[in-house]
Length: 252
Length: 224
Ligand SMILES: Nc1ncnc2c1ncn2[C@@H]1O[C@H](COP(=O)(O)OP(=O)(O)OP(=O)(O)O)[C@@H](O)[C@H]1O
Ligand SMILES: [Mg+2]
Image (cartoon, rainbow over all chains, first blue to last red; front, side):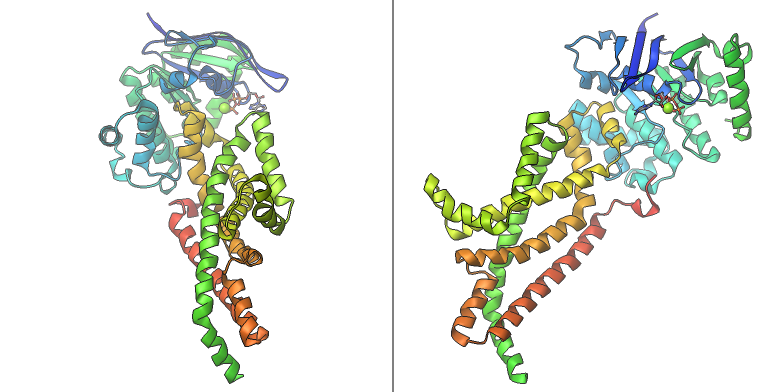
């Protein structure tokens, strides 16, 4: 099978402090990979390094056949090929929902305004968000904002969708709508790399789960394996902990 | 008293002509200054060291010297370098350059209030640095800066009275003329002061309206 992402020996640091100590992972085309791990284990740093929002210290990243450590690579083109969804949505608050979706199409992909709008409206409709097209991000609920953010990432038709804890800033009642959207996207066969602690989602949609701790991947496996027959002591303790925390979460 | 009142009222048509020039100088200088500040700002926040030092030096130079000296330098100094400007142009240039320094400082502190994640979000979509500045950072910066920018505009209305020194017949200079042949300095300058006050008050008020109109919808709910 074809790899859409390959990360080899990735190291990253803030100042002098190394926080990723050689991470290896792959994502096959169409594969859904979930990353879990305690706070501070380096999950966000890993995701940002993949599209060079943070510059890695060393290691190789091969994204859709392009080696990013190659000096000649145009990072803007690479980023345009991937979608990034942040924990805090990060929509552009000064433009309406529709413009949030059309701007990247126009600016980055040079799609004409009218075509961009048609595509954006179609996508919003598919997300059940068309009634908010002319509203501004801060007028929406967190869940709605996050779904718009997912739509903004998807409208670029990315080869890989990266999501960093897309539901953890949301109240439990609002998580469900975002998770349902994500499950739908997963079913459509898009390659996804998702940092999340939503066990139901991982079980329903992930092909593989990677468990991170202290800047390395300590264990990986299919959901049934990792969630129910974890090998390491670290994995067992971690799962007990998050099961206790998310106990009250509504079933998706 | 009553007589003074009618005297002041009789001056108004003449003074309003001066006010027009005052507003013209300050508005044009404000807009040119803003344009320059918008160009200086990315140099200051993104550019490599020599450029950011250069734009920083510019700001220090114009904020660290009196506007009057800058005016005199441009009007009386530049001709020795072969550049002869009329008084009006010299004023607009000096005030614009001066205001650009202040406005770029205003924008710089406004840009700090924009969350780092806005830069990251734009970059993650494939925006270049310049596209991020133009579409994401600058529009939000300008909105945040409106109150301070209006303050600067009001300051310019007042500071443009220095143009009178070069003989530009704006509001203050008109007042001087009127004093010269009416010999009633108290009433004339009271009238001049009142007109400045009215102009500045109206500007501030209009700005409040503008600020409301341009406020990011949903912002009242508080930042996420
Ligand atoms: N901007 C930064 N400057 C310095 N250190 C940082 C910075 N961002 C993260 N770190 C450190 O790097 C390590 C990894 O952080 P990271 O945000 O990648 O973890 P995470 O797994 O995403 O955690 P969380 O679950 O809390 O989001 C942590 O020790 C953190 O303190
Ligand atoms: Mg994180």
